[in-house]
Image 1 (spheres, rainbow, N blue to C red):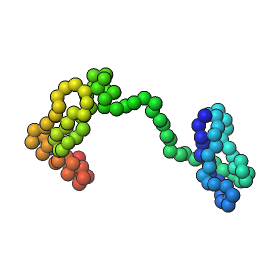
Image 2 (spheres, rainbow, N blue to C red):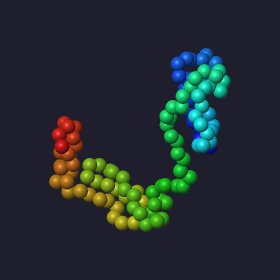
Image 3 (cartoon, helix red, strand yellow):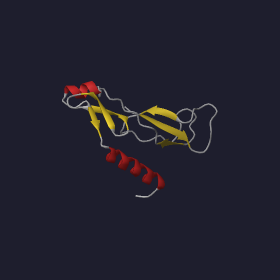
Image 4 (tube, one colour):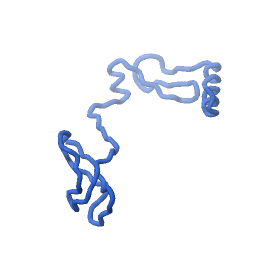
Length: 110
């Protein structure tokens, strides 16, 4: 069951935390009043937290035949795990164009 977050609408209550969380079923109606002080409240959108039970590491990807790379420097990517080449190296023109694109985006032009 998810925890829904609520906050008081107009008043502040020195006894109640605001916002506060309530463990509710997905099918339950949203609360209209605080369960502690009975003042009007509303459900608010809060940050979602999702935990992945499965390992998503580079080593696990390598076991499935996938390669993982990390950027070493501009135009150079080094293999972390998996099959294939150890380094991907762009040529100087690619790196030059990459820097130009970044500058153009910073200036707001397309």
